[in-house]
Length: 109
Image 1 (tube, rainbow, N blue to C red):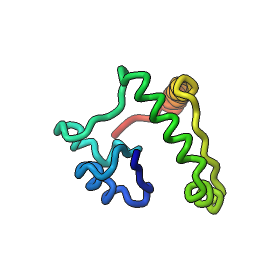
Image 2 (cartoon, rainbow, N blue to C red):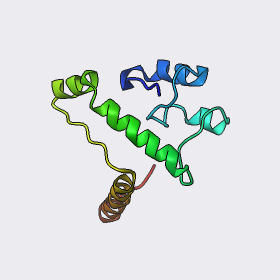
Image 3 (tube, rainbow, N blue to C red):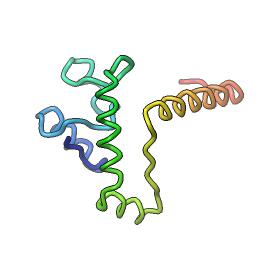
């Protein structure tokens, strides 16, 4: 599996569309391409074996010295969760942020 650094997002999108990359963790930049049918987002219904493979690959990459060195240099620490734990974290954050929006009265303008 081939991924890329976030600092190369525009170039990475071109590589993704051209088939040089297998995946990218930034759906916002490519959303127009998703709507045009050129890219696919992972969503509910993604086969469990694909989710497991992505989790294994991301775990492996998160332990690779180039990434760990870069994260350490900026005082960050990577974390990879098992798919079920990640889903639980997303649900929890959705609930927490939803409550915050209600309490503060935030609105989209």
